[in-house]
Image (tube, rainbow, N blue to C red):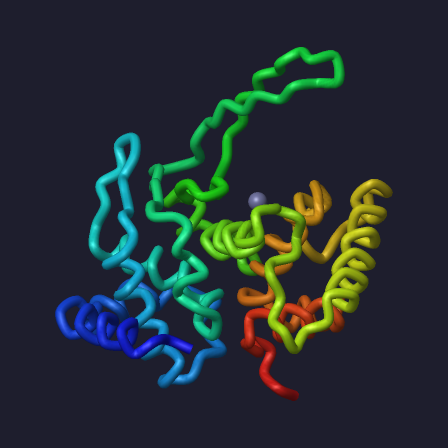
Length: 252
Ligand SMILES: [Zn+2]
């Protein structure tokens, strides 16, 4: 529930800075993950995206020239997972850094002998604990059906709300932690076994990296290709529907 003060503040922001209707339509028409939303849901999403643009900064990196359409598309994508959660779930971070294409990040790992290894890998997205979300515009527009780098990184941000990236965001009171743990870990282990056996997988093999990546990838599939997830792992679909409080596969 929002306090009256929060409501009043939001209404004030929206009166001044609600995203223009035509700009909204133009920016979000290509987003598959909003297909299940009703006109009323889309209006609420527009309000959340307007708040997102007001509260967060989107910073272009490299050669990227940021346009209004790009900013609105990112805000729309970022708010899909929190449509029925709280905007405050994104309070612990403030900026999106947007690269034109995949970016190279330097990661340091210390092995068991205390030796520091430096890896340089190309990424399409990254979410830092309490820090920025980093995205690649090319990966946003060229995402294959079933994949969505913005939703992926937002799922990591929600997962990190309790301070640990373990594939379990703080669940609602009416959810059962044990059921979540069982259904997601059963599906994760099945997926890892298929990847290790070199079998084809329904969801991206990258989800076998660890439980946090599994949650981020199944969240992409949940919003992008809900029926695929529901067919493959109905219990995982159900847990995500309870957590996100959305039913992208409909109620039948
Ligand atoms: Zn990830």
